[in-house]
Length: 464
Image 1 (cartoon, helix red, strand yellow):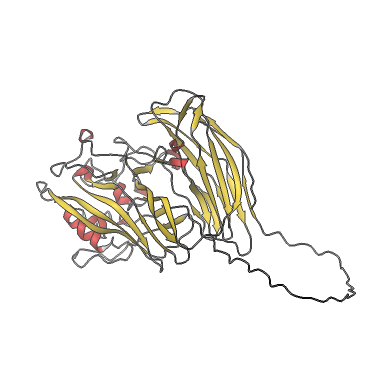
Image 2 (image 1 turned 90 degrees about the vertical axis):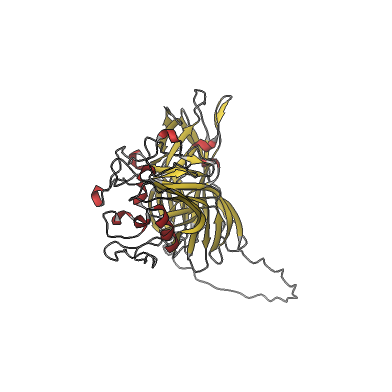
């Protein structure tokens, strides 16, 4: 087991110090329990675009929204919109290619602050908002590729600024041995009709399939996969699907449920202008598991009786040949400090951002099993003043080549755990390279006393 540590002092009105370590992964039994699992998904681009009714937009909200009493546009005073509730939070595009936590005023804006539109292609302007489900629990079996994870919490999908909406509660993910997977939840909401806005009837909870997936390959850091949509036939109850161009459908029971909410045509190709925004976007599941193959213990040697004879040996040693390039795992961090500057005060707290020094990973080992880079931070302190390390989050980014390289999930600053819990920055399943340029985002509490705070972020590289 090899350990390499370097100190990386990150300072600010919130500062951070980073050390590094290389450790060998131990053997692990096949099936194992996992917790702290995060799922991030935004359904499709249409879920963050403008509505065709003037002045309206589509967005995601944490929790089960209250009853508006009729098909109407939400107001801020309703209090229905939430960026976080329990284990559920919402993120969207932020400035400079990053992400941010939206609020009532920014939920329908692009990363540069402009309003979302109904455009497509080069004219498409959407928020790319996503649901982040945290603290999932379950089990994973690296040997069979099976996994089951459940989350406690709810979120709401809103169309036309509230004229119709529905909610999903307590999602459950099941991954089968053949690489297929399903994400299901209990759906509820209100029956609405764009041709009759007086229609408003509560829909009792029913289980539906949010997503079907194929070709899922599990790693010790989780997996990324785009749910099925393209060239999937809509249920037989739908007659208006157009199988041409960019066409497909969400799962059959999902589409049938949306027939009650009045948004059914937004979840399959109907031949309308929004078809290009309907295909599913990538879904990310992040966990920390051990995929090391157990090594059988060595059996004790059987004592033997031996007799010996001397043998004279002659050998000629030729000129030493040129040694081939050493096959090894290497990693490096470009610096040991980062200043987050002076945090800016906003309604949700004090915010600051920066980018970690570039982390380079090179693994050209023969028969490599891959690697994982993780991070975890301590609380922020300034003398007797302190606030939790969960105020720090990150957005893994970089360029990669090789076998099974994936970037970790976005960690929401100020969420339940943030980076106070071990989180994956990137991982690979075989020989590969990576240059990681991970942005970090701080959300300090609104009541944090003024001061120069510091913390320690420990970045760990695990070679397998």
